[in-house]
Image 1: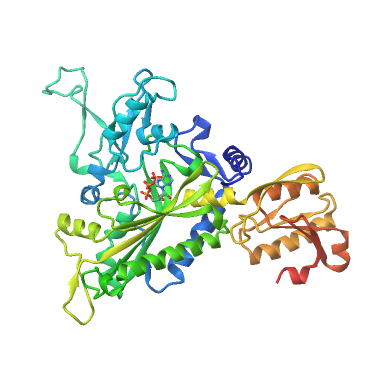
Image 2: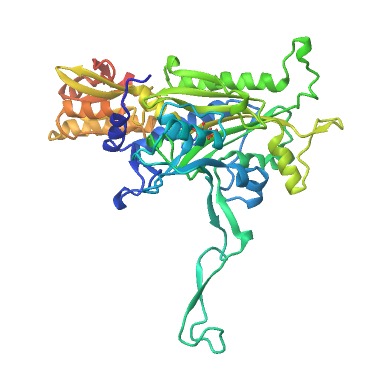
Length: 488
Ligand code: ATP
């Protein structure tokens, strides 16, 4: 398990401008987080790396950016309206609400694969109480989608009947009515995947790609989690990076297990899993902390024939980082059934038509970011003092170079440092920080904490021979480097 403690990471994130509690100034809004300047950069670096590795560097992937608000039929067809639920139980005294499986887990009972009734039985059998020591109610299902209304017939009340001659309400009295039109209901999307499936036909019609091919999307997702917790790990608003990778159905691919062959979907699954490991390696994550879990049938979605979760040793324990699922043709078949539009793909130059099957790698950005931060968090001792630093890989570090004049009251040093800062910034836009606050030791500490790999210091010798001191974050070693070599 990771050595870093959650509270240390949360405190560093707040102190140094990575992540703040959402709406903090008004007392916060549970399950929401705001990214500060360094958090935005780190998150972008992660998301850009993913996009580069999974989309830009491949010729079988197509990117989309679908609307967050979608026609309610999307969520009826996908099953989310009926089944995107978690089991909720309530403290019968103070009415605080909990996720039943989390209550069990917190009491050392694994609830994976259990029905709601089985969970309730276990709670009764083991005499499990709420965290406040009270009895818990029986569980009920709670839909996690945020409902909203689209257009002017939304859920606002309108005033009717005031001072209107002939109105059904006595003159001078006011009544309010709820404007409510069931067709205006929409939901903030709980996953980006459906925005991909609903664009399957569009992409096929525009590009007619050969199978197999994938459609990728990054973007916000919203889940009204019963109990958001563990920092950004379980938030109500978060970001996903998802791919739907379309393949030939197994009954059409001419492969057979009897002959010792793998179906095409199995090959695609293995390739995407391998690519996922490459991505996690590129993030610098310690492979010892990465675990594959082949999800047993009873814990998988009913339509999935194989799901592999990647679990990671977070400071909060071993938890799901991302998942890859073989979703058969469940989603496209549902869209076809509810929309009445064909989702069939025709093999080029033939009359062979079918609804493709799909493999879905699904990453949560916040969980990846939490893994990166907990992997990078280090404490050591320098000159008898405790030091905290983030050993982030250079390509992820929000700031690559910090540039300082040794003394900020010496104009000649400041001028030279400004020149170097400007040149470095041209080569590394947005990734160079000017830092002349406090003494050099304090600057190093601050840059260590935000994970800056190189601190460049301009001193009097720089004015003579155009060399600077470059101090390395992990080793704290200082080297004298020629400016020309440095700003290549
Ligand atoms: P969990 O079991 O932890 O609730 P899940 O299995 O419901 O997660 P999926 O529906 O498979 O999650 O979502 C895909 C990915 O989205 C997850 O692997 C995770 O990285 C991320 N994710 C899901 N829910 C949240 C959340 N509330 N906050 C942050 N990330 C999330």
